Length: 525
Image (cartoon, rainbow, N blue to C red; front, side, top):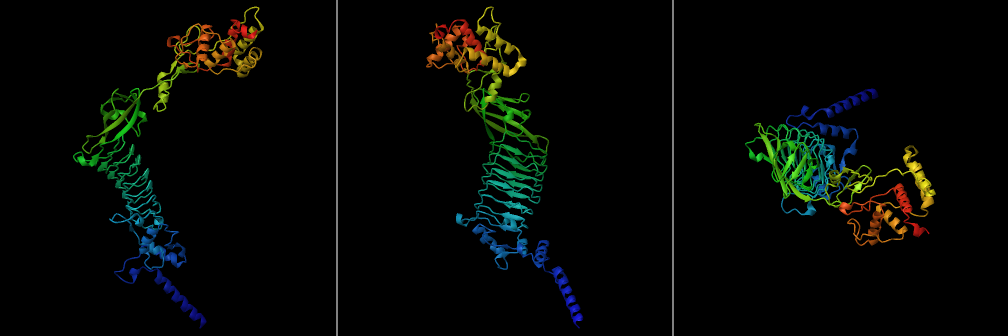
């Protein structure tokens, strides 16, 4: 009897389990079929996985207004959203666009939206959102988050998304990559947005991105593009590929007006490679205020021009005619102000000293040239004196002359290298210049020589233009050193080039020359 009862109970349980998994349509017509999401949720609950229910509390929905909003989806009023309840929510509209709404009633965070994985449409216009994460809402087809306070929006990897509207947000970044179904994008009025890449949105039909700060707009191939408004931006070029749907006869479908970009032009020349995006000078057809050279990629601006306007070939209409747009470059002129000559062993150059110079390195390029030496080894342009080997010591010379010869041997013997160079100059300084600090530039060397000679008055009272007039000692020292034929100056330009560096060897050679001339006799007695 017990075995028979057990068999009956098992059979009854089997029937119950079979009935549980049958779809509702098997029992009654006219009743909605259960969705796959609901079926999965029900099975999850039957297996005891009740942890998937989402409590409507501060932990899961931190914003009190949004928390209050989602309570309407709690159909059994148990204070939780079951997976079945969440799966039923495909459209969520928490707009605050109606009149009379105060800031206290607006939503500041949509944290918790990630639990609504079946969402197809989300509208949250005119709230106070500063961030929005829809990465878990992969079935979204429409998103409207206009007039919030979003600084960034990432809707990448939403293959079903067809419509996106984010206008009037302070967006600095908008990511729509891998949205192949996107047909309409409205981000106009996002005035901090400087770059936008829609190249992967191959189904794009309408793009509204006017009144932003766009300097780069990457369009890619959009064969279905019918409307484009990118006016009132900072664009300098536009490349429309495969946009055969743009009808030339419909003037209201293509807007590019009021695109201007600020440039600073040095000496009336501007390198076009500095413009944002992929500017192609060969696509410029007409220009006013300057001329574009595609070969050199240089814009030459008219001396008095404050702007350069030009027509750019952006692509092809459905008719085959060129799609043309006008752009403007707002010009600020800059004139380089150069400092002293800078140099190395082979070249000399000048560099603009203005703190706001737009092209400091270009100023170097434009002034750089090879030295032009005279017979004495001094550059006629910048006054650079090249290093020469020390001449052989005269017969019967002093011990100092022998040291000079030692230095010469060190210099000529290139294989000896830097260590020998330091040793040679070091020996000379120990014997002939004990305790005397090494100068680092020409004016320090001149002052060292002049002071050791007793600060004699130079013959000439002329002042060098590149030495401070108030620094009388420096002026006298430089003039005296030149008069004694110890150093050279740039007589044609009345310059001494005081900041030019001098080597230890040059210091030793010049010091030795002064000793041979007897200029230090009085101070060394």
